[in-house]
Length: 258
Image 1: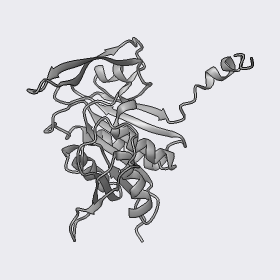
Image 2 (image 1 turned 120 degrees about the vertical axis):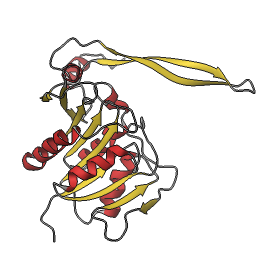
Image 3 (image 1 turned 90 degrees about the vertical axis):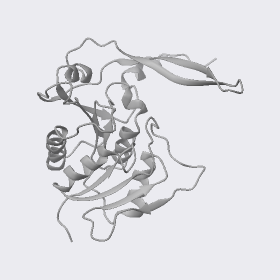
Image 4 (image 1 turned 135 degrees about the horizontal axis):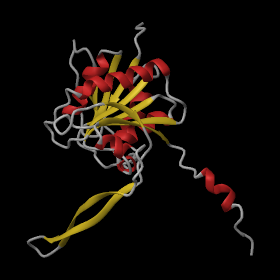
């Protein structure tokens, strides 16, 4: 039986995406790797799961391959669920998701399929990290990111991650800036100012494309957005307990009786 750490790799861009190939390569240097990832792009799926349809799971690795790989017809969260329950013969020591093609900093963590996979692993008590590169291009250069991915994943294996916490890691594009290092920070208060581009089909039926502008309202120098703008890899500890604990006392002052 292997004494190496078992690492589950997944993503939301699909099993053939260059980002996941990079992540597999790095994780193979740290442990035994099993891949369960969507068979098609699932960006922006959030924490959706499949409940009204069947799931298909297909082994795509060949005999002699170093890493077992499976494609799943479901969402990123589905991939983690089916990996834990149907594929793996023991609990993974780490789950890593990505490397996403594009940012998942700030409010993007809510919509991210990449982070939903990591969060699903965290819910199951598995240390988990979501990795994203600030380059949406399919042929983005992931080479510089490898060093930082390995450093963070190795630390997670050696030190563990607190129960209820998942790491959201965003990496600047090396094409736009020289990466200066890693900063642990908080999520910036920012969101999308959205618009819908309304168009018509040749038959006269309306349809819409979602567009928008990302607006950062947070001027703090301890945020992920600030770290990324300064050329640092941002590491944000995310908790999936969404309770606003600070507001419980205030809510208890409401009068609920007639």
